[in-house]
Image (cartoon, rainbow, N blue to C red):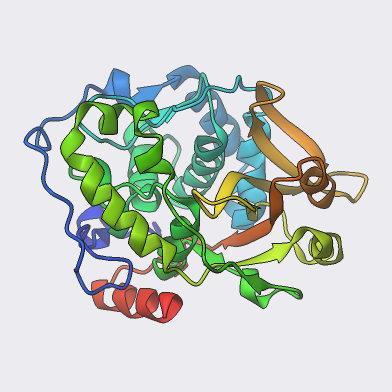
Length: 325
């Protein structure tokens, strides 16, 4: 029996502020009711189907969600790195997936999305099944109507949002050595707007994006400092989402990947790497952090079984308020 409620039941208000009081309402785009062609929203059907075929044959649905995330991630090992894969149009925002090229966000997102999709045990799946999962985790409140500002653009917010909706538990504060990031200026999207197609082609989005950044800066973000990460690596699990916290203003995180314990017992970072230009299994997480002076530490989320998904809007709001207060 499927663990998934129908999408219509899983949809939650998309115009909520981070505190759940509705203070921030993104302006509607005139094109928001148009739909981008599937060929734009979904690239790499053959690769997707090869993963699905293997997952069905090997009954991945029966293994824990974190292990399932890593099963998918391993199938993406070696995929070329491609930056800005979320920027697929000049105006219309839409859930998307690209198996031909991944950046750090889309690598972990697709791995998690397929793992969640497989919880609904079937003999076959199509692109729409995955895009529904991506919509649910990528967008504020779990819904996209075509508005760019509905997307969760900052990873720190993603951890709070997806914890509130029962898809990924934000466990950083439960780990030894957790500390708070305070006084952080959040400004990457508005400062670097020329790099983002939607902000470049829709100047009216920049001011509300700035307001959203002010809200994100208020989040009670915790991290594990670099010097304390080696000690907590035994507590990490396969499939944990690892946000790389940065020392610099602009955002809370500069990168993201997945925790993977290899046969030698080392808990490593698997990620879409700009340096290697592909998806790689890298050094230990603590070792990776020490390679770059800009890295402050890590933020950790643990994927939850699909049965934990929050489908009630009021419960989601209560969860979100508790997390950000």
